[in-house]
Length: 151
Image (cartoon, rainbow, N blue to C red):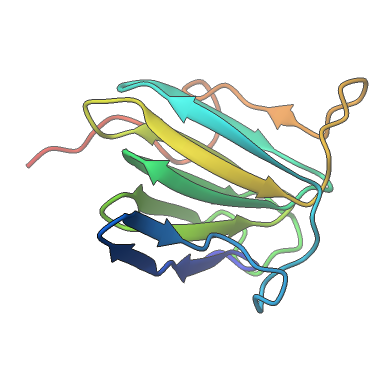
């Protein structure tokens, strides 16, 4: 696993009314701090990535559908520099993925319907000076292709 990344298996509690799933608690071992919570979606076949943050830590949870979340450690001083990780997350694998600053990340919907992510981040979004840096999803030096592997 990439240094500083954590994956927590989330417990889903179903009953006759529906289901409940705790995503992030302030008493979780890997909780850092609260900045904001937002929801984003991804349509089938779309790649959202690559991007990274200098300050912000992301805690991503796919709450509907399935996604492939991909991480690339580009941090110069990291013991896992250059490592790529794929995480399949969503309804069939309810996990929270904590992504530290400096780790490039992106995701793609791997289902036949829109996938929904809830992201709890450590910093509020600054519209005048966003802590978000982008790299083209396909034209870059990252040793990864978003192409689906069949077989």
